[in-house]
Length: 414
Image 1: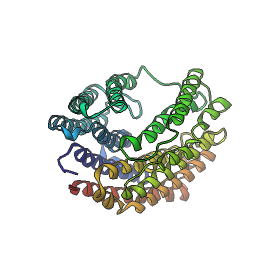
Image 2 (image 1 turned 30 degrees about the horizontal axis):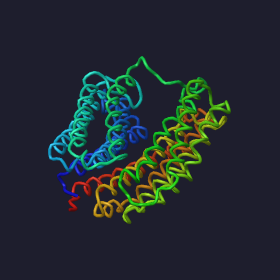
Image 3 (image 1 turned 90 degrees about the vertical axis):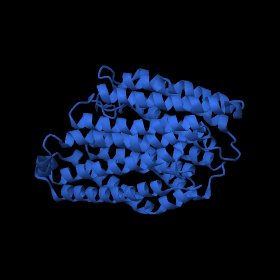
Image 4 (image 1 turned 45 degrees about the vertical axis):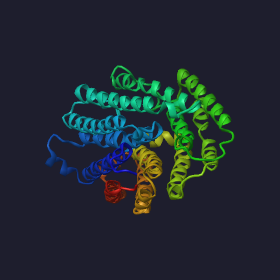
């Protein structure tokens, strides 16, 4: 891949954000091990660094590879004008993430997790999204003569739907709006978890064909119909509301379990590049673990003991560092080519080992915390050991992400 292509530019930025977000994660782990270090940071407290870590992981490491995916779907690199707009969009996106971090460190946020955009940082991010849309629209106009039938219609539909993203962000980040919650825990309902995960299911289903892989995609309409039925059930359950003690919410979340088997079956019908095999397996393994453990943790008795403990930290890292990172790494090797795929294999087992260790340590912490609140004042040895283990896992992930960033910077496959 040409180093100056829009896709290559996006991947370089993505791996950079993974590294910097992990550095902040290491800082947070150090502050939990040695709280007195916080005195050296003044007003830059733990609470101000947390949204920086979360948002750089979500809008940097997770989102920017999806932007590269959009560039591939709309074949942005075929139009010099679209390429210029695309690279500008990626640069503005990163500038907006820096602006968001400065806003959070200054104590100026919306107060909503993963939606901390407010005032100037919000408007800067909206500008980046508009520039991104312009790059895709220019790509669409330049390439529409090459697309026929469904390929043309799906891209037009996608372009139309993306217009609503800035509007949705403004509404979602407003303190005056909030989704339905489980009143017994203060967390999301089973329906909310179902709805958000169905978006991930749609992305998993769409991935092979959007990468233009050859294959025999049988049963595609049946899978699409199943997804649509489950989405309608999500809307019904979300409207009704409820708690994790009600069978409707438990059963609704269980609708995700069949996708643990259906997604691998669907992917197996396509001819994937050989160098993507490792990350396909990793993504599917983490996906199965995430769905099954997520449903088990939602059950009455389990959620009551794990909620608002490090058990939630374990689940979020299982989702982000485990599944989501494997998914975007699969995207990166599919879009970046064989050379990048080979480079990203270096450190891969260290990454998965560190993520697995992190998740297990925090699960143990969460269960012990939920059983006895004395850990907050007595600082028992098991807690201190787990926190030091978490710090070590974070350091390993930061080192691996540094190597991956350098690999993306050097990737000049033609």
